[in-house]
Length: 135
Image 1 (cartoon, rainbow, N blue to C red):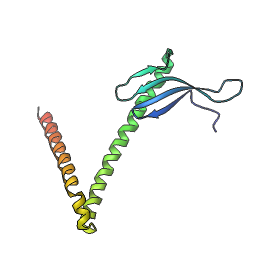
Image 2: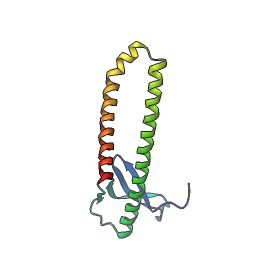
Image 3: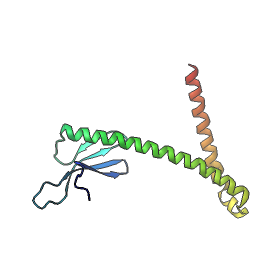
Image 4: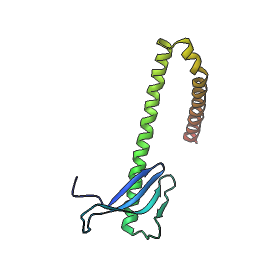
């Protein structure tokens, strides 16, 4: 394990993280992690843990982590969408080449509704973008 540990550790949760201050400066030379805050990515909320008061250094580190985390999540979301396009292509190939009638019967309505919903959203959003660029 590296001897240069970060000052803060962020335990990722569904919508943010629990923030810990890492302490190795103790008599037992053990790693202690003291929870100092809980953060929410979606709304930018930073809540001190318990009766703590966060220092400006704490807040700066948390805000920097939140900005970095937001970029990671956005990149993952775009990667997921690109994968979805690949899956749609693979699904079309499967339906055309190897799917049985029973398999197609099982998924056709659900897949058609999902694709119709997606198409409706994409067409509406494209129309909104085109309208904004003309104004």
